[in-house]
Each structure stands twice: as structure tokens, then as C-alpha cells.
Amino acid sequence: AAGTSAASAASAAVTPVLTCATGGTCDVGDTGPGGGKVFYVHATGTFACGATLESTCKYLEAAPTSGTNAWTDGKYVWSGNTTVAIGATARGTAVGSGYQNTEAMVTQSAGGNTASRAGTIAREYRGPNSKTDWYLPSKDELNELCKYAKNTGQAVGGAIRCAGGSDATLRGFVIDGFWSSFEVAGNGAFGQDFGNGSDGNIFKGASYSVRPVRAFG
Image (cartoon, rainbow, N blue to C red; front, side):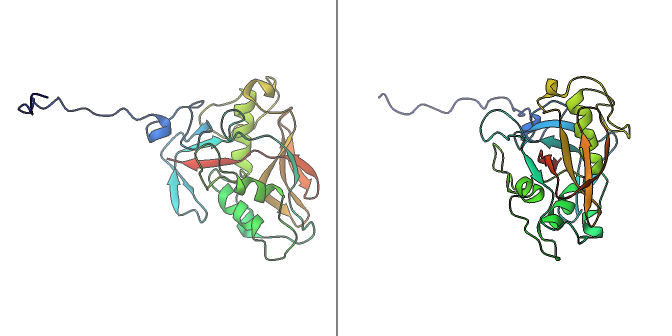
């Protein structure tokens, strides 16, 4: 009411502190940019990621099972085509290759109904923050997810296979078999039991649980 005063002195410079969700450093168990739980941190450097492996990432997060747009672990068949192999584009095993595998599953040239199948369900998930790059994990990504679920093995990187140990429900997973996006053959794909850690070639027409993941960083 009295009018405009002279400007005050400038404040000291402020540097915002970034969290894992906003682009900062992440640890296993943090909430990632997609709203999921970080379950894998690459031990050294980065890994190739993205739909064509053209990007680099450092972290993997799994779809959350609580909060806004939470994921519910459900059972789905891998593919509507259980006789024709997709081929090389669906056979990446490494951490980071699941996105490319999943895209090949959804668009398989040999046809077969892919709606409501494991790959399509994973790709359609958007999560709490409307991310469009969720996918079905590769063989090695699924193994890391199994280790996180059971709270066993290495928390960061490494090639240790998921094995028997703590009850998987301790980390919010059902004790069940889960699909990967890795095709083994025309009639089979790789799956892993989160109860005992066993894994192998599963008939594509079988119903296994699905948990979408995404790579970032």
C-alpha cells in the first residue's frame, strides 16, 4: 500500500538436490523416475538399452504394486503363436535387451494374437508417471529381479543366479513363475520361478506371471 521498495540483495546461489526420481544417483530400493522400485544398479559404467539398444542406461526399476496406477501381478501366456520362432530380435539375454525383445514379441511377423499376452501387457503399462517405455525383462534382467525379490545374491550387478532363500513376498512379489522376453525356440520362452530360483524353457502357451520393468539413467 505504501508503494514499491528498492530491490533486496540477491540471495546466495542454491543448487537443487536431485533424487533418484528426478535424475540423481540411485540405489537399490529407491523410487525411480517411473515410480517403480530400483532393483538393479550397473556395477561399472552403463549398459546398452532402448528399443534398438541405441541408448545407455545404468538402472532398472520394476513396476510398483502400491500407490497410483499400481501393477497387479497377473498370469498371461507368452504369445498367441506357439509354433513359429520370432528369431534374433527376441533373443537378447543381457541386461538392457528386454525392451528390444518385447517390441519383437508385440510385432512378430509370423502373426498370432499378441493382445493381452505377456509382451503387450508389459508394453501397455504406464505406471504412476505415465512412462511409455515399460517392457518385459530379458533373461538376465529377470534374474536380477528375482534376486531383488528374494533379497539374496548380489544387490548390485554380477552374474550370480537367483536361488533359494528368503520368502519372495518380503519384496512384494508373488511366489510364482515369471516370464522373461527371451525367446528360446518357436514354442518356448525363458521363465524363472521366484520361489526356488529355477529357470528354463517354458511353453509359450503356458500362463506365467508378468512384472514390467524399465531402464533409465
